[in-house]
Amino acid sequence: MSGDDPFADLTTPPDGIGLRVGIVVSRFNGQVTSRLLAGARDALTEHGVAADAISVENVPGALEIPVVAQAMIDSGQFDAIVALGCVIRGETTHYETVADRSAEGIARVALDTGVFFFNDTTTTESSKNCSASQSKC
Image (cartoon, rainbow, N blue to C red):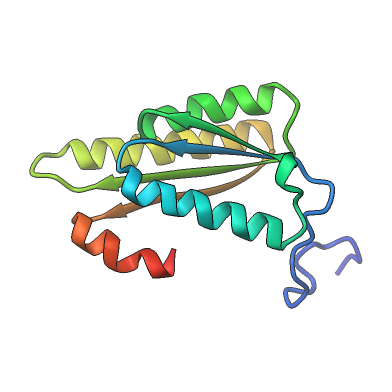
């Protein structure tokens, strides 16, 4: 195994020193995404990313995340992107459409650009379930 393998030692905490990170966060279901954003900021700074090296862009909903993530990557200003959203099932199939298309778009941007991408677009059956899981997010 090569000495350059970033996964060779998974016990070493990630080092974010010098990284520039863009966060794309959905405003829809903001009671959830605001907590995801706070957690992402805390985790990034805890691992060495400078607070002023974190840039946040808000989008209306999960479907817009890939478009803005692509624009952030195209700007050349970011080493990594964090996608934060929340899709809660309703009484229609709209849930599946939004969750699937958002995930497909995020995967396409990550694969097409090669930029590191962390996706935490939470999907849940109800707002009650999502609220209960927030301590795990």
